[in-house]
Image 1 (tube, rainbow, N blue to C red):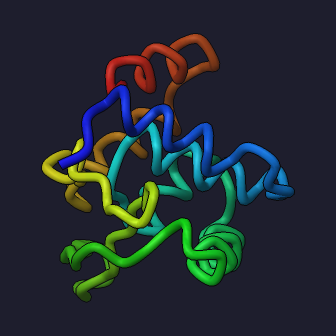
Image 2: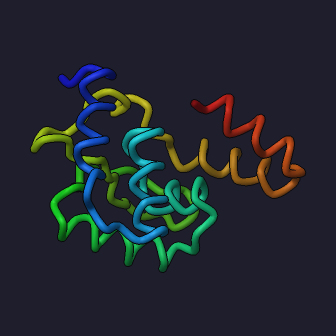
Length: 129
């Protein structure tokens, strides 16, 4: 298990000197902040489209900084989907692995965010950190 302090240091090393695009950085930052997430969860927290998230996440997988860490059931699609996490110094973080949001939790958060104004959105995201 990797500690929060080591995880943050490793994240800085991971991103330092790398030429990640803005959208790749957004995907990486969300995974670092919230732990293990599905593409749908990443899309919700970044505001990027699902297809954009999929492409940027695939690029990060090819770079060796993100990896599949499990599967989750998506209530909307009634399918199992992949859960992703950042790889720090070759080690998958277990810091937030128990905090993988279920699709029903994501749906509730997504509905709240859709109805919320900017200030409320920031408050909701703050509660999740």
